[in-house]
Image (tube, rainbow, N blue to C red; front, top):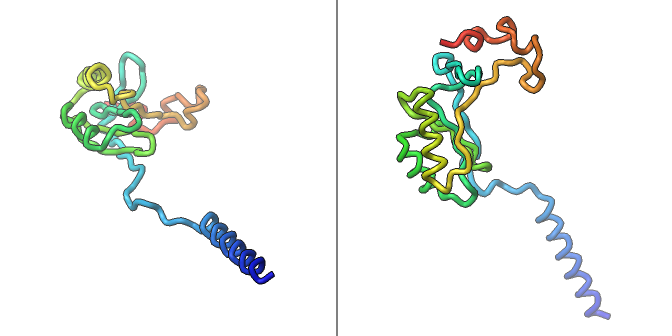
Length: 155
């Protein structure tokens, strides 16, 4: 009888410990930021004549395949003369500035990245939405009067 009492006490303690472990808030394993993006200035915006979209003239967005190490990412970005200015590490997405580049340079870098590096899943120009509600195109969203002045008339 005494053994049964001791065993039930031990089981109760294990259940309580497990409950505390599962439902107590956990501190994050790392103190590093997971997400941070740079905002473009109005001087950095240009209109892509091919698509009509506003884009950041010297920034490329790159998504790397899962498992790509940070040192490999840094090497690839260095190879294209880029600098990381933003990232979402959870999705392996990096915002890369290529100083002095224009839209044609960015298009060339996209092609280079996609054909030269198997770790690159996607590379694209950084578009900027000027609509009040970009999910619902309408005259109200796309008229120059409804946009910020810097976005309605990019240089």
